[in-house]
Structures are given as structure tokens and as C-alpha cells.
Length: 151
Image (tube, rainbow, N blue to C red):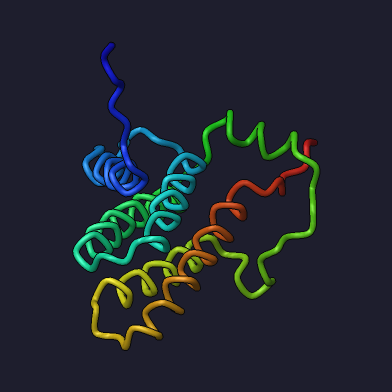
């Protein structure tokens, strides 16, 4: 009887990271999809200790944040507007001072560059990575918040 090979947790994690790093960034992705992809990168980043892998994840995150930043300046496609209208308007978790999506992306990019540079003391790098994680998740949620009212 043949045995089925299984991956250890570390092998599985490494495989997921490599798939994430090697997958091309989707050029036709919409604002919501790119925001979700940023959140995926930052979730893996916050759990990664290897410096080379962290640097590669930061690079991919920065590329994706650049793509998100470009989408912030474009008009939303009708299907996304429809989603934003359908949702129940809620109080935003984003402070009024940060209600500009591009500003949030700029902050996330600056944090990612700081983390990527590996010039920070380990404790500071860990805390800034956590802040980057929270900022990107806040951003991903913010871009999907219903804010348009139907006429």
C-alpha cells in the first residue's frame, strides 16, 4: 500500500509564500481585488521571520500598493459603484482626517519601505510591521465601505 506524502506545516507555509511571490500581479484587477491582494501580502509578511522572504514580500506589497494607488485616481467601474450603493452605510473605522484613500495608501507605502529597508532595530521593525498590517487591513476595509447613496 502506497503512502500519501504530506507536507509539514513549514513546507506548506513555504509553498504558499513562494506561490504568492511568484504569481503575477493581475493587471486587470479592480480596486477591491487589489486591496484584498495587499491584505494577503501583509498577512503573510507579519508572520514571516526570514529576512530575504520579508524583503521579497515587502517588494511585492509595494508593487501592489502602487497598483492600488493608481486605481485610486480612476473612476470606479459601475459594478463596484453598485456594490457600494447596495451596502448599508456604516460609520467608518477610518478617522475623518484620513478619509482620502490615496493618503492611506501613501502611509502604507512609507511603512512598507521602512520595514523593507532592514535598517530598524528588530523590536521597531516588528512593531512597524504590525502597524503596516493594521493600516493595510484598515485601507482594504475602507475602500469597500458603502458610501454612495442611490438617487
